[in-house]
Image (tube, rainbow, N blue to C red; front, side, top):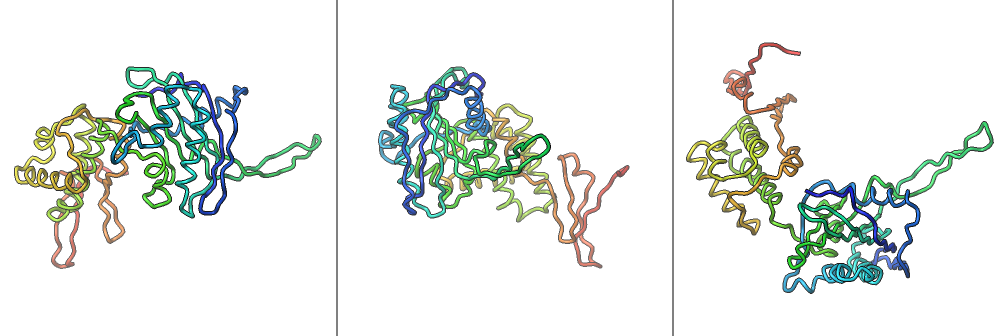
Length: 350
């Protein structure tokens, strides 16, 4: 669990970074920003911290030596001596500028903060925040003119409800590359989106219970799409996904044998699932655990990916809300019409 409620600012550096390909350059502040306004402090805390809702952790990494990860070394220097915040923030800004080489990358304001008193699980740690605002919104600005007239003006500014990019580095597990959380509103897998997580930060997921929960849910969905779909109707696919999701929702811990007994049931299907699991892990380059604590926030966040709809080519959708609905729907084939059909039983309708 993570708690931001007691976090306070201990330092803030603000720079501006352009797109290197367009030679937009850097605007480097020569000293830390003085946060004298308490209201501004609260606004910035909301702007920086509220987007971090999913407890999905990463760590700094490098192919050969963690000490060669630039962000890791910059953060390590700051944690060891907080007076390094300003010079190391300049190094971070220059490093990000050198990674801003895709023509679609937008310039923007770059913030490096030092926070104290973040509760992370059972310890209170300091944290470094790195943020970038890129997109500007248009705002109306009404102004009074005399006692009976309003003048409407407009201006561009940063929407404090929409942080574009950010990361929080917590001063724990230093030898493993710290614990890091990220936000990237435009991370859609394209080249210009990857520069924040991969090129600038160089992060990899921490293989904790949230990672294991997410991996198995992806495995269930992939198995349903790749294997189960060849052998079953869409109704059976939806019911399998519902049973899988119900297992993760109703249990505190995952056990592969227990999952197989409750969800897969048939021995042939259990063997098929285990074979697919092995291929899935080989293709993705990792080995998942067969028992772990289930992360309910992860389950909740992934529910939207599990569609419980049967969409028919006759523009009719059938929604199966739970496993118990299976007894009220039958699938068949009408030879006269040369079409499949679903028969639905009910007592009342609304």
